[in-house]
Length: 349
Image 1 (cartoon, rainbow, N blue to C red):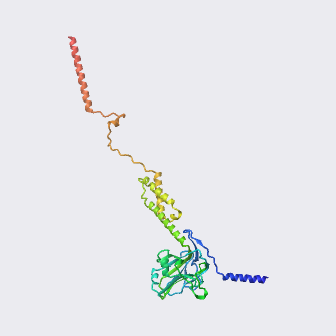
Image 2: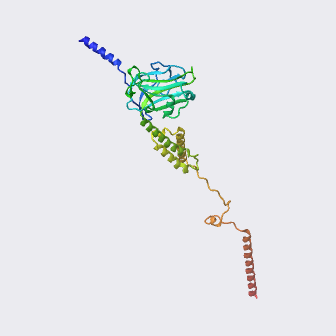
Image 3: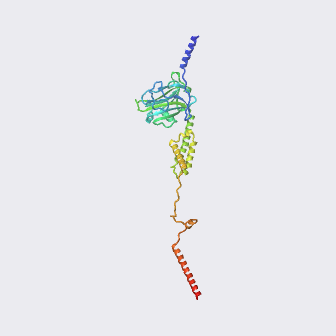
């Protein structure tokens, strides 16, 4: 009995080793919300006949990217570490680095240089594959125009050329539920063109999800731009104008606070700092309002009779008028005295 059990265990183990590993699971990008499934992260040098080398310094994700020189080198074959079921996906995404845009001119002359990107379900090239030439990648890329440096390539699977193949009895249509092999090469008659290519982060995703994320990003950028415009319109805040610009600053703050967290990511830090500084300046003036200026005396010290009414001080006396009054009083007194003397003399007679 023990021998029978031992034989069964050995058979089970052998069968498990022969079956393809299928451990890839879908992942969701926290920023875009796009769900995708990894094909190959390029963090390790793959098995297969290739001239690839690891670059741990320059990559777009994970631990490394893979690089190669364009020229008469080996074709880069990459057996995937895990079988991938891409049934729910219709788009291939990856990151492509190009050191020189002259690369695209090298493949314009038919027969001079050759390039191909292939994913297969046969475990080898030229059987059950989807393929793109470099020109096809340029033409069908939905990630924008390819340039020198890193590019994000987005290729609808429908844009690929399908090759069923004929060798080893593995011919047949591409099986998207059993992706297990990748090949990417750029070779020709030149020993070395001096151009370097790097690849990273191969994955399958859903086109509808990508376009939805792109539309969402565009909406975020547009909303953020409107808020930044309000903030940039705020001028210098002074003691004289802070009351008049206070509402503009408050309106800019309300507009910023209404943005969702996704849109706020597109508001430059400098704009946020300017808004915060404007609010602080207004709060400072409100807490310590500037003193009002005293009105200037435009009368040069002159006062009117109305201003003197009710005052204890008497107006100055006109000396000439006072002298004339004294003389008149003295003349009357002399006349009275003369009449008195004349009346007294008549009585004595």
